[in-house]
Image 1 (cartoon, rainbow, N blue to C red):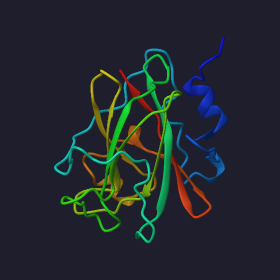
Image 2 (image 1 turned 180 degrees about the horizontal axis):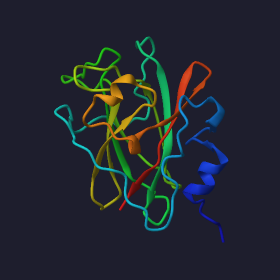
Image 3 (image 1 turned 120 degrees about the horizontal axis):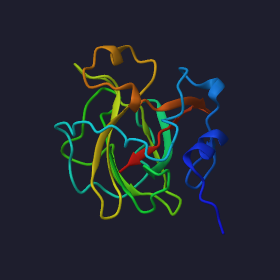
Length: 195
């Protein structure tokens, strides 16, 4: 019998990535954050947030939103999609969209937009840039998460240490990404709990 790793064991190991291993060293973290909530049976689902005005359906399937020569701090964001019972969700749809480094959304094409599916262990991996700010909003990445045949979770992910976090009325600390520097890229970690 193969044991499926729980979120707690994966977070405790501090190692992850679909296709590669990515270590997020807590000593390098930008802010002292607890792991994206420790998993306990019956945990609440990840906090839902507004879709906002810039969602565009039918994004291309891809995990790489970063393009060569694109301005902005590159980031590799990884994590799991888990049930409230801490079980990984294989084949869950994740649809990401975000602003560029100047805070602008591409509404005519699909730049910085894409969807993907979790692997057999419930893992996802996104390569992009840290989004810029725009009036009234702090840095954030939008995402829709949907288990196969399940309900859609729409939410936003935020970055630690941002001054605008305090003035953005939508910001929630429960949606902070754990971050660390990793060879010129920003390494990010967030696990989604759907239920």
